[in-house]
Structures are given as C-alpha cells and as structure tokens.
Amino acid sequence: MLKTTLIFLSIIFSICVQAAPNFVQGLKYPNESGQGLEAIDSEALLPEVGTFKGGFNDLLPYVVPAPDQENAGSCLFMSHTAVVEWWLSKIQSPNKINLSERYTLNLKSRKIGSKSISNWRTDTIYRFNASGVHVLNSDFPFTKGWFKKSAGKRVISHKGAEDAVYGTAYNWIVSPTPKGTPLVSLPKFERTVLYKDRDRNQWNTGQAPKNAVALIKKALRENKAPVIAIYNHYGYWHANMIMGYNDHANSYGCPFLSSYQEKMEKRAVKMDKKQSEAKEESDALYYAKKAKKYRRHGKAIDSTFKKSGGCKNRGVFYVRDSIYPDKSMPIYDYDKTRDGEESHLNAPVIIREYEWIERLSNHAVQITLAP
Image (cartoon, rainbow, N blue to C red; front, side):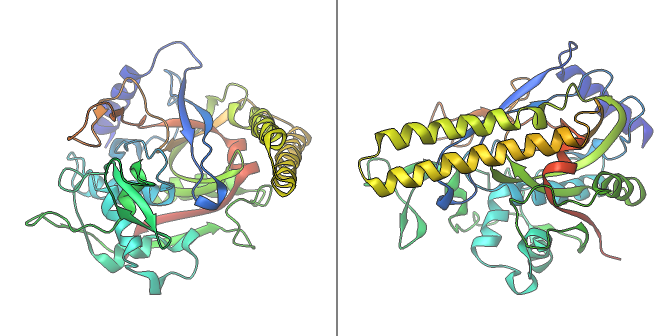
C-alpha cells in the first residue's frame, strides 16, 4: 500500500506546477433545464508539493480521472461512477478500472433500481446494486452527439435539424451497448448517510452539522472509503467525491468561499442586463427578482463565513471532480467522427478548504462494500 501510494503521489507531483497556489479553470452548468443554460466560471486549487505531506492519503492511488461533463448535468452520476471505479481499482490493483459514465446515466434513464431509491441524494448507489454489472468506458464511451427535446425527452437528432443541439447531454439518451460488449461484474455496495438536509434540499447552505468536517474525516480514516458530498456551487448544486484530507495543508485563503459573493454578484449583473433588455414587464420582473435573490444569497454566505471566523488557512479535502479539465492531463476524444470537440481529462485531484464543507454542503454519504 505504501509503495503504491508513493508512486501515485509522485505522479500527482509531476502534474502540478511547483509554484503555489496553482489553479485549474472550469465551468459549472446547471443540473436542471429549469435553471437555464448559463454556465458559471469556477476555479479549483491543484495540489502542490506540500499538499499531501502529513495528510490522509491512503485512498489516492485508486482514483480514476473523469472526462469533463460540460453541460450534461451529470455530477451526481459522475461522482457515483468515480466511487465504483475506485472500489474496482482497489480490488484489482494495480489495474485502473475506467467505467462508462454514459452507462451510469443510462441506468437512471432506464429507471434501473428506482424502486430502491427513496431519496436520490443519498440512495443513487442502489442503481448499481440493481444492475449488478457495468461496462468499460472504452467499450461504451462518454460521448457527444446531436439531440433535441421531443415531448420533454431527449431524442437522437442530427446536425442541421430544427432545435438540434450537440453536446454531452446526449449521454442521457438510452442507447444499446455494442453487441458483444464485455460486462464488468459489480460487488454489492452499501451507503452510510453521514448527514442529510432535513428538507431534502440540494441547494441548502448553512445546514450542515457543526461537526461535518470531523464526520467526513472520521469516516474516511476509519472505513477507508470515499465520501460523496452534495453542496451549493455558486447558486447551483453540485456533487463530487472526497477521498482524503490534510489538516496541515495550506488552503490559500479559502478561494471557493472567499469568491462566493463575487460570483453571485456576477450572476446578478447578468440578470440586471436581461432585465434592461426585456420587452415584457413580466420578464423584467422575473430577472429583477433573480438578481435580488443572487445578491441576497451571496451576501448571506459571505456574512456567515466571516462571522464564523473566516478562513483558517489550514485544512483541505482531496476531491475528485468532473468540471475541471487540466491541460497537463491527456486529451479525451468525445466523438471520433469529429474534430475540435476534444478536451483534456479532469484533474485527478483538486483541493477544497474545510470551510467549503462547513458552509455549503447539505448531504454527505459514504459508500462501502456490503458485508
């Protein structure tokens, strides 16, 4: 284990620029069509040389980087795929098992395991149990394609068709895997809810238990398994996988929390512009209401953050996310029939300050093997 961990950390070090802090850029799109189409620019800290020193690093060797989800609205399923990949990679170490996020989205679209789910925020892993099998990304890749909406559902379309859109949301369309695709057998999983929002609200902030950071750290350390966290990402909700922490690492001013009000103000300014351009009074009122809401929310987060003592500048989680393509990572080709749609794989590890969980998270679930 120690040798494997050291090898993985050496790879991470080779990816990172030695000067700190080093950021990677990404875009967070809304998860649901009702929230519009607007993406928010987002940044994340990359690890630097001192990030892992003295930290809990045992889970890092089995992390598999994801393709950029772009506007698929698939973070919850990318994160669960990440956890299942993690477990399979650990079981079959040193082999890395790269599963198909598209297949995972198809499980949801086909309603596999839906009867076992009473709260999708905490129970999504049961879809994998209900399926019992998965496929490799090399056999059924996360892709891009032409699609449009028909009767509220995405259907396959083609370039030039009316209302046709090209992108990663194509992966939600139920598609058969190629004939003869090998199936990957899955172990049974169980989930432990570390905490959940009492209102089942994936946007909620300020509702995590006061010991949320301690709960996640304890679960990681004692059970040696990843945790999925859901939180408010600049007014949208987002999910990712946590697989380690370091009490001593520099959080560089808590960039995610510290920039929250600024990001919400940017969203409000866009609503101001739409309000000024609106031709109908009802539209103008709608955009004005949105702008007011964004400003109120941004100020509330900033105020509670400062009242709680602000940034402690020490203590970070290691996170695997699906919206931060890293130029030092290999190129991922979504569509081999086209050129120009490619992107770098996401950074295998980004860094988030402990305060991110304290102030913005609303659900945390640990996924382990069933006994």
